[in-house]
Structures are given as structure tokens and as C-alpha cells.
Image (cartoon, rainbow, N blue to C red; front, side, top):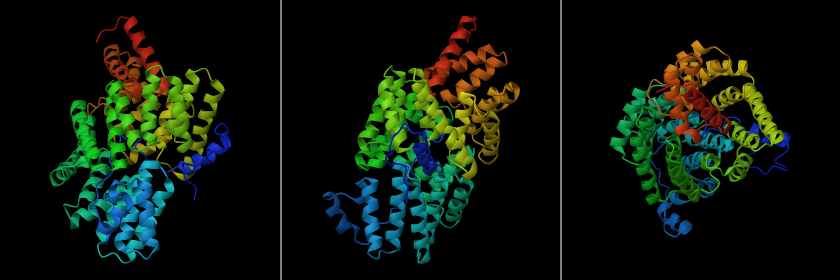
Length: 462
């Protein structure tokens, strides 16, 4: 099967890269415009029948959970091939889901679904199958389907940890902040753990408390290091890096991304974050090298566009154009197949003012089924680029409604306010954007600084 981490014959050839992008369409990672990452859902760990006896043979006395995802997959694949049980199939599905989070391999989501189908044939505990099907649905951005499955489990088992996590995550992605908070609160009470602290941290950031968010995610990251599970370590340190980057703490962000990559080398979300920090601190050549590796592993629109921006800023116009054409190719593929990358593609179109009519339709369609603040932000940004400033302002206001201190939202809303003559609001918002400028796409970071400088030179005051 084709996976995202394939070796390209020549990374400069658009045709080969588009083949890789075709495999990438439909993958979900933390970078798909989910606000500052989505934690892995905690599951009710199903012990192998004789795992206590077998695990020490693998890692010298540790547990299977401490192995990298690829090794866990290999272990459970062998168990299933040797005639494994329902529990082995469940553990295999979990391993595929973990590896997909770590690598972005779409095929692992399909493999997880197949393992769950086989487990369902003899399932003595159907809830364990249903909740994992909810995880697969969530990974594919079927948030309504994920919510429905998780709620089905909760009706029978109100304290099911995995179902609470998925039910809360799906509500958060569809804009139901109160519903997400209620489920996260229950989850944290039942299982105080990195997964619950991470979720509460994300919610704190969304509702305007970045300091509390950093404390909670730092706690999650520290606890995951003690537990020693590399993929969990990588995610929580990545999430912490994004929080630091959003608030302008680039030293803290670089340290967190580096810790993430130490736990799980070539972890693409952390590679992207580290590249952004390097670019923001005048180390553009290093940033380009990292993004070239990252896009070779995962030609995701946001990553490819960022690489194109860095080429453009370095004066490599032809190479930048190649990257942008690749994003256009991904957009054509996703138009035919459906894509979890819709939001990234909308932002790319608005950032680079290309394909705006298609971007508008895409943004409107996604907002209709996923009414969170980032959906409003994306639509506001496209409407601004189309010169429809009053309509853009309505959605910008909705994007700002929770008080989320996201520099991307502040940048878009700031330019919209400036276009409508509200210089005081524009100045305040653009100051927020520039403080966290490393979270913006490279070209937009420069544009945000220029817009702020222009407002200040015109004599605007906060």
C-alpha cells in the first residue's frame, strides 16, 4: 500500500510529489487547523492475554506502551497472524491509530477499520469496537459520526474514558464549547492524566487563558515523559511548543519542539513547528531544510505552502511556484474525493489570493457542518480577500467570540477592522498577531508586521 513516507525519486518533480499528495488526501494530523493540536484519546487499555510474559522479551522489562508505534504494530500484527483473539485485534487497531497519529499514514486508518471489522465478528465487548470506530471517524473529520458513536457508548457506559474523550473532542470541533467542557471535566475527574490535562489546556487556550493552558499542557508533557511512551511524549511537547509559539515565547517553543523530536524523530507536526521558530529567528536555511524533509514525508497543504513561502522569501521564485502548484494539485484532488484539508486549502487560497471563488464555496460548506471559531475565521479571511469587508467582519467577530488569543485569528480580524476604518481595534489585534507572528504562515508574518507599522505611522493609538 502507498504510504505518506515514501521516497520521492526527485523532490523537485511536481508529478512525483502530486502522487504523494494523492496518498495524503484524507489524513488527519494535529496540524489540520485544529486549534493547537488534538490530544490522543485515552482508551481503556486492553491487556494482551499473556502480555505480562511477552512484553519483557521486547524491551527488557518495560510495557508494550513504551515501544514506538511501529514496533507495537509489528507485535500485534504477529499476534493476529498467529490466530490472535478479539483482544489482539483491538490492540492492533489501537496500534494502527497510534502510528497514524505519529506518521500521517492514511492506510493505517484503513487498517484500523479492518481490524475493528474483524473484531466485531466475535466481539464480547462491542463498546470497545464502537468507540474505536468513533476514533477513526474523528481522524477522518467525520465529527458528527464520531460524536454519534461515542454517545452510543456513553448511554450504556457513562464513565467510558475513551468515549468521553471522543465525545468531547467532536463537540469542540463543531463549536459546542459547553458540551466539550462538560465531558472533559468528567474525564479529568475519572482519570486525571496527560490526556485529560491536554484537553483542558486546549480548552483554556480557546477560551482566553493561555497561561492556564501552558500550565496544564506542561503538566501533561512532564507526566508523559515519566511514563515513557514516545508518541505521547512527542504530542504533548508539540502541543506545548505551539502554545509557546502563539504567545511569542520562541525559546520555550524551540525547546518543546526539540523535546518532541527527541522522543519521536521525524515527527512531522514538531518538524513544522521547529521550522517556523527557526524562520522567525533568522535561521531560514535551517527552516527550509527541515520543511523539505517534512514535506517529503507528508505533502500536506500547510507544510507545502510554508515551504513555498520560505523559498519566496529567499528569492527562489521558481521553487516557490512549484510548491504552490503542488498545493493547487492537492486542492483539485480533494475536490473530487473530499478532504480533511479543506480548511488548510481555504487559508492557502486566501493567503496567496488564488482560487478565491472555490475557496469561498469550500469555506461555506465546511462551516455548515463544523461551526467552530476557526471555521468562521477561514470564511472571514476569504471574504476579506474578495473585498466583502462587512460580511467578513461578521465572521471575524464570531471567530473572536471566545477571546482566543490565536495570532492567526487576530491577524485576519485586524486587517478586516482596518479595511472598515476601525483603526483602534485593528491596532490592538495586529499587535496580538505580531507578538505571536511565528504562528502565522511565513509570508503573512511579514504582511502582519507591515500592516502594524503602517497603522502606527498613521498615528493610530490603542
